[in-house]
Length: 156
Image (cartoon, rainbow, N blue to C red; front, side, top):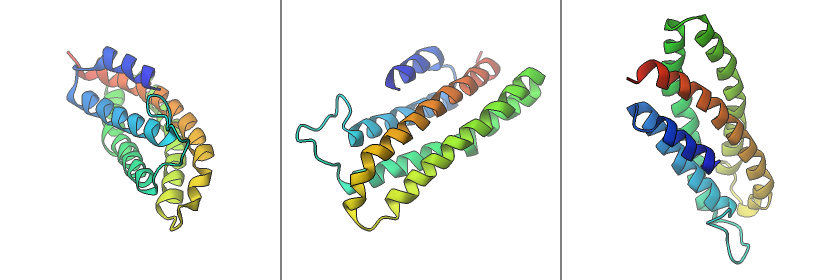
């Protein structure tokens, strides 16, 4: 996912403030994901679970990221698509519902880990992070299609 982000930053970075902000927030989310998942370069030497507080902080970033997409970025892209022809509009109408499916998974993850009062729930974290990681990868691929539209419509 980090390689995919680097390609997106190389392709669209610096062309639009909204795109730059969104990619920066994606980077923060991915770094935090790798940290709590113990993925390189953040693997834990002792194979211990992350701190419950760290998981909750990740949940905050996750909710902020998906909210930003739905309430700021997607609306702008969909509007651009509506103004720029039927093919762009059809693309947006196809992609946004698929992204919404990944949002549901992210919100379920958030609800599970922020409402838990006992840190024993962390024993389920590896499995849940794996599923969430798959959803995030799908989401980022779909978002990149929207970024392409936003870049082509708003960048000079």
